[in-house]
Length: 171
Image 1 (cartoon, rainbow, N blue to C red):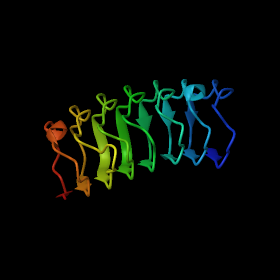
Image 2: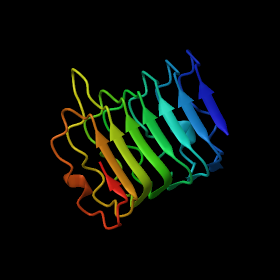
Image 3: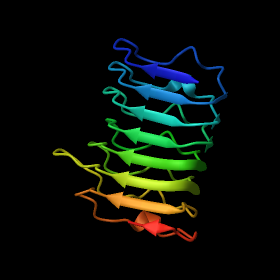
Image 4: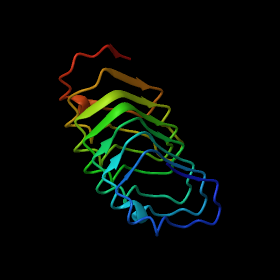
């Protein structure tokens, strides 16, 4: 497991270049963390990925080779404007929760994602910018649950147009 939490002066994750697979990655509240390029060789996360509160992290570049998350992916309280860097992510076996990302305007970067256990997009709003569309999910075909709640500036869910699975619930 890789837990990187509350490191005020950590600027990058250089030195982790030999990692190709990990059980868990948790990146939270690292005030100076500005890039994830040290994770560029990771192709699979066996368990969960959790990212939030990294004020200078403007991009998920570094996860460019990540294809599968065996558990869940939580992106909460980030300062990202989009999800570029996840272009090779194909599946998330658990839930995919996107919440409290006040600068996130779209989901660009998720174009390869075809399968998610459960999708939850909630409370992504802010004064300067907000989630306007969920483009980027055009290739998502399989999920059991979709919950889209409290995204006050959301104008379009057209990005979900290719869902083929039988949803248990759509909220």
